[in-house]
Image (tube, rainbow over all chains, first blue to last red; front, side, top):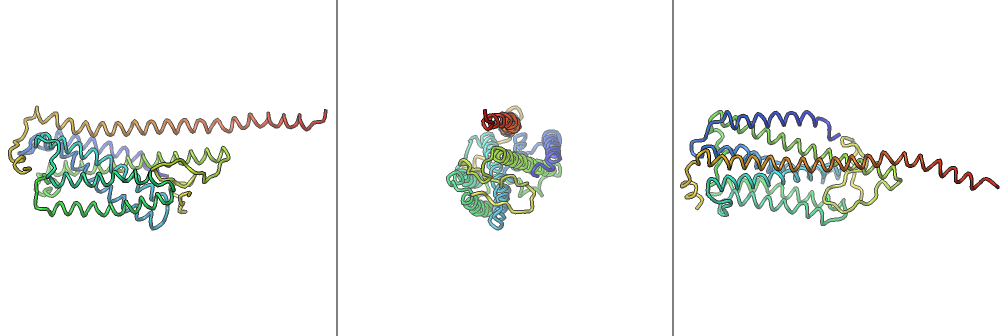
Length: 256
Length: 78
């Protein structure tokens, strides 16, 4: 079941988040150049890293879906991308707040890291409309997986291209972790782990909710004497095999 | 442009930087809150659907004896 281990994961996330916040505000020293404002980076950078990693994970899960044609992999890929989009929105907003405080502008168009992240975000913003545009669930899952693989490959390429670019205007936190004082590096690492745990927990919540809803629908159909493979209304969300347990060994294919 | 902006901006004093830092953390908190609210709505919908499903067998058992009684009355010669 998707809900297995959810409680442990939730507790671990709460502890990690509380620990991270404690370290950020009571342990990590003030940075010499930016002062208190630098505290934004303990939330902004982990959000960005987790969002980008989530997009790549979504691509890897989509590869698994294309290999096995098992709709559960499509669901996992969908949830990973969906959650990464939410994290990306948070990244853009927190980044803009930092830019406003530090640069005096909410957005700077000639800053390659900002613009490249926006491009990645806008690329993935088309994922849900793409899914919604295709009515046939089988075709929808296949096309969405191809999109997730292609876009997932674009994310690291884009990241490397920006890193290799000559303009190093964006403050580098990850690249200079070795130069960070031990207390700052520890705080950053704990914040990153907390954010990754938050991402994993929310993904698990989402998967559990979707699976439970699919089971309730299957039960309704069974009790009302409807067909098990009855057509659903148009949706961007993937279809899970009716009534199949989440951890079942048999590959449940999407009902066409 | 970016380099010059970065070079010209000294560290903000605490009373000024504080609102931006608070803003950034509040954004994360609000996004989480919205997500939890959406999940709560979904959960209540699932709960409602489950309640309806639980009522289905009860309705069927109430309807079945009534239907059985009707068919027996119809089949019995007067």
